[in-house]
Amino acid sequence: MSGKGKPGGFSSVELFVLTSVFGLLLLVAIPSYRDKQTNARAGELAEDLRSYGCALWDYHATTGSWPADSQPGAIPEGMGDRLAGFSEPSPIGGQWDWEGPKACCSASICIDGVECSIRVIQRLDEIMDDGNLSMGLMRYEARRLIMVLDR
Image (cartoon, rainbow, N blue to C red; front, side, top):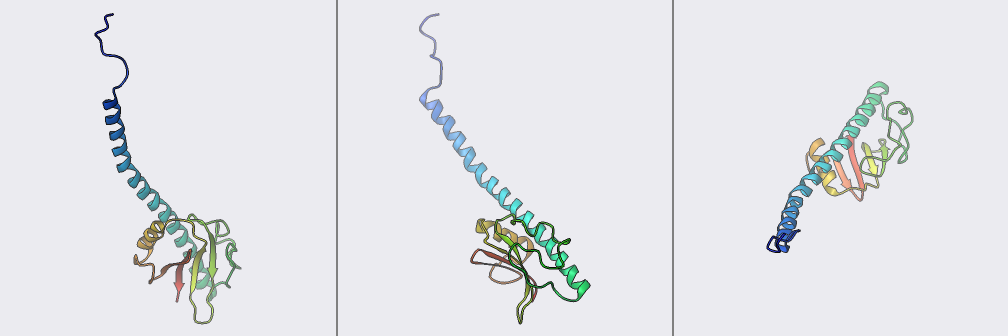
């Protein structure tokens, strides 16, 4: 073969164009992936909170009172068969905690030691409450998520 043919491989310009296109695709894909991941984590947590909330309200309706306060990671007394997974870490890290009613305080489900981005918690609040973490039934303060069941 004569030496007039094009040499094999890609030119610098072709590699630059390929890298640029790949970079643009990543710029579009990564935020979309993060949004889906945020929605999935918030949805999983919302399902757990609804499930635990229903079990605790059922206990309240049956007995006329809330279970006694428990330590983080401990299943409230009398709720062992109703709160499967309550002693395991939550989907956003941290330990589940039941805050039974005390003098002038509310009954609430909490997660102590939350280990996720604020975006997940904000999305959860949009799903379950009013979208404002400083008021309403869903609160977040100092790595502690609180869902008020009864005021």
